Image 1 (cartoon, rainbow, N blue to C red):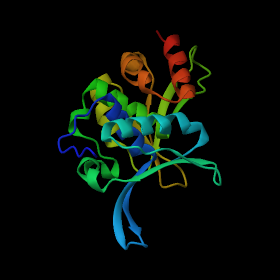
Image 2: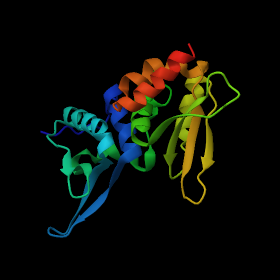
Image 3: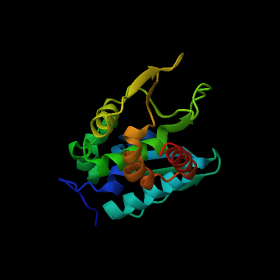
Image 4: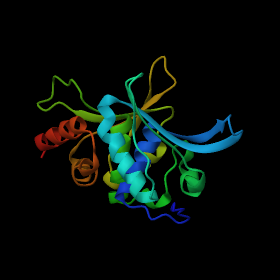
Length: 214
């Protein structure tokens, strides 16, 4: 029997799931031509390096909604896909369309941290900057999206007092939402974000830098 939460209990795992969905996922109506029906579907499609992320999403989704959906290995395109009909779960997912989040997640460090981990695993880049005049090069986290991520800015600035900026990518209809890793946000990243990251190379890069600025 499927769970249909009308007032969902948002825990850290579900917050991470929402982050992945908002970065690499798709929610929308799909026309089933054979049955002439519109089906509300969820889909995620990633490259091989993101397999740990989509597998974590699979586990959380199945446990939360008592489903038995599996990641599909699309060998033709060398991609991994997760997709399923969510007609009976629409009450839960409807508020998440267009990158939305639940209000309870905005300023709760545990929930927002897990959500941010999902976003970073999906569309984030953990990059050192080439600052030759600095003893320790700066590092910043960049998240690419079609629009500036205002809820990310609001949450990070409220929880860490760190400045979040936007920059439009040249020649593209996309923006980078970014912030620098500093002593101000080290505690938040180390305690509420890193534990939820599924992609080891992002987790290790971030942790190594945090160790340098302690």
